[in-house]
Image (tube, rainbow, N blue to C red):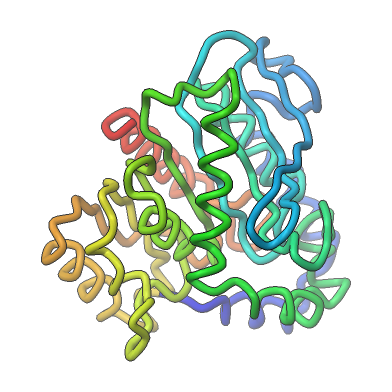
Length: 291
């Protein structure tokens, strides 16, 4: 289960902004409708979105919040990938909100920077994103993520558009994948579903806080969606995680998808629409079952 090494490989390749433009254009339309415009969705009226902030143990978290304009809905904590908050992630959140969820996309780097730092994955590579985010990522330990998740849950439960009587879901991409497990372990009484998509570092041998080692503290249903190239690099990881989940009594679907690392994200060079749509359907089924 990849530790983002694939992204560095892409960065060294001759991937031009022009190629990314094709990916982020056509792919975003297919993967992110409804709700590509800011404000209310034109394709599916009734979505409301805002930039928000709230206090955490470590400072002030900024985030993007989108939800239907009527009623109360299950809350979702959305952990982005290494390039963090940007339009691709906001679009993914809008699409999910259109299904009847109140979705909070977190800025995991809030301890160092506020808001969007990279417009898309092309900008991340062009601006030397790996070097920029390196010091920020070092602070994202299991303990830090647990504190952040606790604060996010508390904030969601105070919102009028969140049904606090229903469980909260959490989903994460690449670096955000393990964050979902740490989140579920930190707030087991509220987080009832966690989904990791091409998550890096779900099995960290010798680390007692590796996601697979904290499953005894988790009460959520899990979806672990593994990239095919990550699996080829470390085929034992999925088995180790699945066995740990079974031993802990945690319902977990661990599956390898026909997409390479980053396949679910529209502005990723690995975006693969058929596999991404399968992953999205599986996410919706997880939330329908668990929340």
